[in-house]
Amino acid sequence: MRKKNTELLADVIRQVLKQQGLDKPLYERRLIDAWSVVLGKSIMQYTSGLNIKNRTLYVQITSSALRQDLFMSREEIKNALNNHVGSDVITAIVFR
Image (cartoon, rainbow, N blue to C red; front, side, top):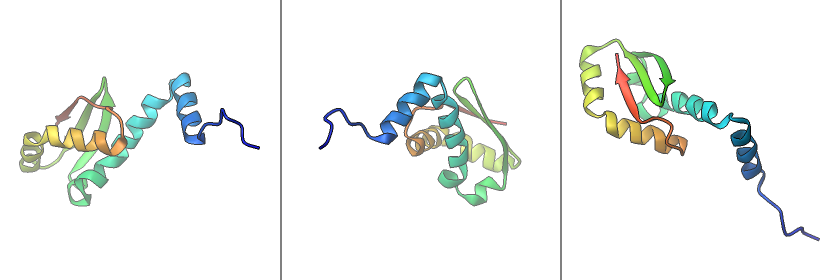
């Protein structure tokens, strides 16, 4: 006999993480991990020091030409990263 008030385990885990305040750090970690997936391994070679502070992603870029290219498409990159994670984690990207 099935109970009528059953919930998916994934939904219960999300609720617990949100109640404990652990959902934001989890999404931030997922977004940083998604950088190499969304932008590719070749761009990852020129990036370091990815961190998120106040919903802004800070990225160190070693190539000035690549920095300019990424700067021009930062909105698309931001949207792609947020879509990959499934949540609006960041609102801006700063390339250094």
